[in-house]
Image (cartoon, rainbow, N blue to C red; front, top):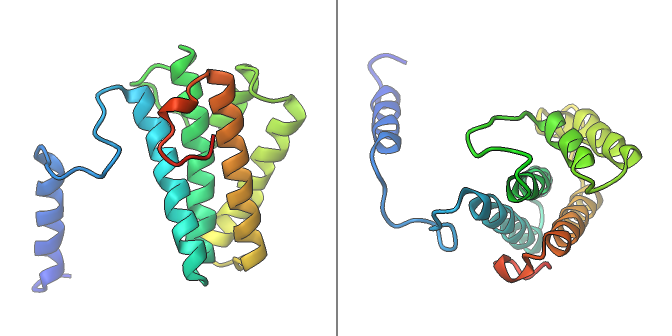
Length: 164
């Protein structure tokens, strides 16, 4: 992409991520990494609900729903000390650690992992096509997981999406 604006834009974007920012996203200006994960999950749910109302953004609703589920589980793992803020875990390990933390059963963890493994990437890469029903159900699942985790953690008051 030499001799195009694309390389300049890449450099500019990289520079912006290297600098401290300002005008942060509403609700995410917290110092606590645990609450940040929770509030990111809330924002994903809010965005998915907004896009669902706009109709036709099924792929993005599904992506945001998976992300909200993972962020919510990560919040709980951080909140309970089972995960350190600097520790990286991949998608499948998040679901496994949620089981280990007692959030749900082994059977549920397996189903959640299979849902992610067999459908998220297919939808994302267009091998499986996102539908309105799939998007609606994924958002319902994300909200239910979010609410369940918040009630277990006793942190419903920190939720900024009013799902809890």
